[in-house]
Length: 244
Image: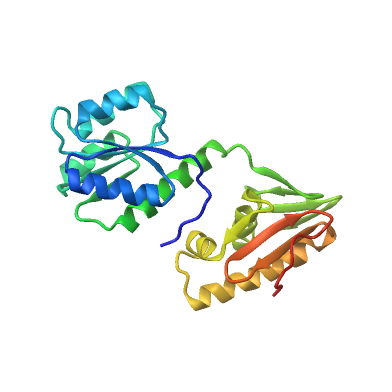
């Protein structure tokens, strides 16, 4: 399971009427760094939503006093863009369809693994962040200008068209300039699988990106041994490195 400190101060509303499951899931999410408020029925969930500020709602479908579908509809009336996912013991096609017609971002059937829930939460948050930043396609990387949509890296009067993998990798790096990009996270995000062959492929693309960025000596991709990479932009060239 890949986790990364990329989603800070995320507030989750969790509505689950199974007390044991709800408490277990809340504790697990909080251990992963998510601020999680647990409610045990739909009416309590709606009241809590009105009083708080949340980034994501996780709703059990079958709850007393107000079911998850009804609660989701009421939340949508107040905040159309609020992302949410359903937890349910049901797997009938009609129930799944109803959930997605309400605008659900995901739908997970019990029993499930806690890690899978976190993986799906991260996927939703990435989509939400991507949607918010969809118009921010041009990045400044030192003296370079990087158009993430056109996959063009420019400096002075020179332009270079990057391959899709190069552009995706540079986008992840530029999202967190001077911060750690976890190696496993990059592999899962771009290559889906973090096996040996994909890892070696990513090493090749890191080397290619370093060559592309050589025109600005203040821009450097460094290795953080055993963890990942940093796109460092400074006259110092960053901390001690273990270069490939």
